Length: 475
Image (cartoon, rainbow, N blue to C red):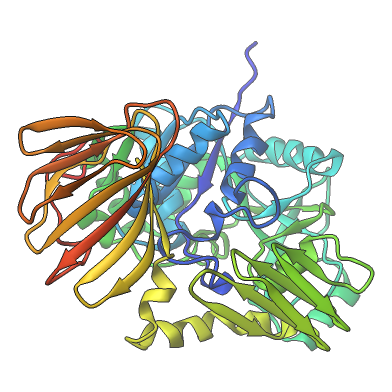
């Protein structure tokens, strides 16, 4: 008899505002290498790809991240079953219901799915494997299973689950508890039977959809219609925007798990973190003898319990305790580690100010499916960028109404199209793109192309692009 494989579903649509300035709307924390050499999303992919219990993963993400998902999966050589694109963020209930509806359309209503976040740190070992096995058995018996993490401290940034009597590694859910204050968290830990809510789930699609129909019928209709009216675009399934927008913006905990009689929890003592704050990142690392964690170029003196992360400038910290210093190329955050949970409201304040809105959304380096560009200088009527193009890739055939461009190749080989003229440029060679000229840049070589682009004109915004032809479906 063929063993039934779990279908992993990785949710990768969040914006991770509490890890600003590294995590921003254009490239949120799941796509950053916060705790290692690869991104959290890539770690999540490898976690399931290297486990024989799993089928190929499905990823649900937002439109802006579709090529990041595809590219990062390719880098770690993980073949995806599908990529579903949310037209707008509607929280976890709609996300999970849409994936289940898509699998139902494929005739997979009897499949078991394991819903995982793309930005968590999880310790893989015997406890993890045992938890999945217990959850799988319960899911086959018609239960909707969540995973509860045994708390080792009274964290106030997590929700909690109160569990009933455990049998065969599974317990009924008594109730879900919102993020508590410290005193309440301490009482729950002392009492026992309370677990951190991990946000991971395992269940049969058919069971979930039946409960969805019963407990959240409008959500079920909205997501089913979003799938039925979806459009296949390259390697992506675009959910119908109008239908999906009618789905309630609600978590799956509130919509289903707090109402159903089928909710179970598998308690597990694995090392786990949602990496939802700079303090959580600090705790996830191994500190030095002074309790300090350093990533990048930094010098610390007479400093304890500090997190120093830098993408460029050298960070120097002297005589401080309980501090986070996070330095991106264009913004620096300094604050107390112990107050890291307030970062979300702080970023909302930055976003509400027109003068600082951009630094909450866009990095100096912006990644595209063909490579990246970094803004080096930006002034009135002029802008200088460093552009990289991957081997074999090329930008869209395009034109600009308000700016001219000068290109200088500093590394690799460029194929340049200007109107009907196509020519090859090598290192230290340059060309000029007049205002309104139809043009294209490509890399026919085997190494990354690097060039400097100097823009000049009355308007230099990225929306001054008229795409005529594009390999990535952006026309």
